[in-house]
Structure formats: C-alpha cells, structure tokens
Length: 298
Image (cartoon, rainbow, N blue to C red; front, side, top):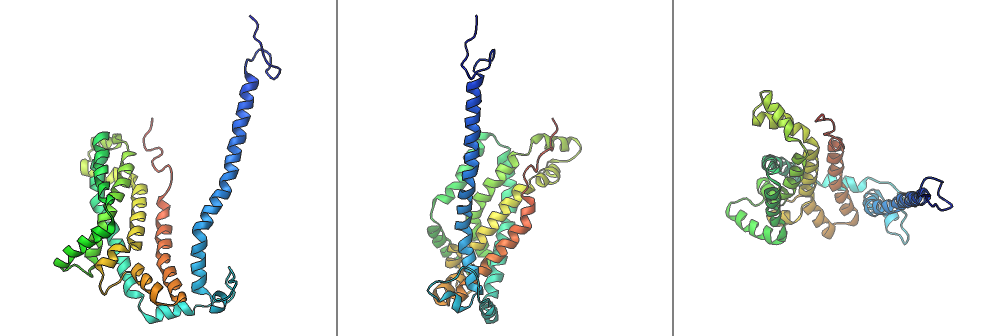
C-alpha cells in the first residue's frame, strides 16, 4: 500500500516535513528564550547592584557631588574624609569585633551541632527524613520578635545580656534549621556504598564519616557556612533585644542612620559589606559543580 505524503515530505519518509518544522519552531523558541533571558538578568543584577554602588559612591564623594539638584552617578570629587572621620572616632571597632566573633562563633557551633544530626537524618527513610525536617522548620513559623522577647527575658535571669555567647546561642535558634536542611540535602548525594567500602577497608563508622563523607561534602558545608555567616553578620532583631551597651555593626549602622550624617551612615554601611565580599570570595572556591563526579564508578 502506497504511503501518502505532503509536498514537504520526502518520498518514503512519512511525516518528516512536519517533524522538521516542529523542531525548527522549538529551536527558534529556545533561541528567543535565551535572548530574552539576558535583559531580564541584566535588570535583576542592576536592581541589586545599583543601590550598593550608590552607597559606596556616597561614602567616597564630597558634598558637592551629593547635595545638588542632579547628582552625578560617577564620583567627581573623590575623598576619604568620611572614612577617616569614622575610623578616627573609634566607635566602629568594638561593634566590628563583636559582629565578627558572633558570626564566626555561630557558624562554627551551628556546623558542629547540625552536621552529625543532618547526617543521621539523611540516612533515614524518606518518610522520617522529611517529617523531621518539617519539625525543624516549625520553629521558623513564629515571628522572631516574639521569640527574641522571650529569649531576652530568660537571658536576663542567666546574666547573658551583652555577652557574645548569649547572642551566638540566640542566633542558633534561626540558623540550625536552615543549615540542617542544607546539610541533609548534601549528605543525601553521597552514596552509602562509599561508606561501606571504607568500612570494608578497615574504617569504623566514625572513620568513614570523617575520611569519606565530610571531605566529599565540603561543597554543601561551604554553602551552609556562607549562608549562616552572612545571616548572623546581618542579623538585627536579636542584637537589638540582647544588646545594652555593646552593639553589633548592623545595630551601630542603624543608630548612625538615624542620628549621624548621611556620609557617616553610608560609610558604616559600606564597611558592613566589606567582610561579606571577603568571606564569600574566600569560600566560593568550594562552590564547584560536579564535586562528586567520578566518586562512584559504574
């Protein structure tokens, strides 16, 4: 029986022309989507970067660049006077030291506490695994203002106000569920066959965890550490409730925003972002895709 074909269909190959047109249509759609993604990405990046650039510009510009009817976007009168004033005043060093200690302490303690628990949860059945994660995230259902108020009342009884340890413990309330969620997803990607092979070669359970699982999970640990450190560094609510005379840098920036000059506020805000760039740049080397590629041979 002869096969009918359209004029666009080569003889003996039914439907070839229709499939070709559909494939070309899909190719055009993919190219259009790729081209449309660039302006959207540019707008998103500009929306995030431009306020930061303006903040840095104000901290480095003279008054004649700011207090004018049409302020220029670029710096025409560069000056470091605002930075000298802030540094010479000396009020920035205690808040800066406290923020560094609290953010680093929160990150390290959160990793020590969350990593073993996340590893155990990742080796459970899927039903129990997600149930425990949901229970962890129920602590994020309550507003931090209400939690901070009750925490501050207890910390007054324990004489932990204005202490670095008290603020670190308060930050763990919000940091632990998030870091545990990241680490559970990280440990899930590590095949259990690797641990079994290590145990067959003579490693115990703890040895397999330290020598096999943790080195392979450095990517997830770095991501968890970055997000935890950045959150603790920028945290404001607990610092407001648990600080009387020893401010953190975000709290100090907040006070200067309302009581200081525009230039000092911009300088404080710029200094607040500098450690964020440094810690992200240092840890970004661990954020490599395909970290586990080739770990298991087929």
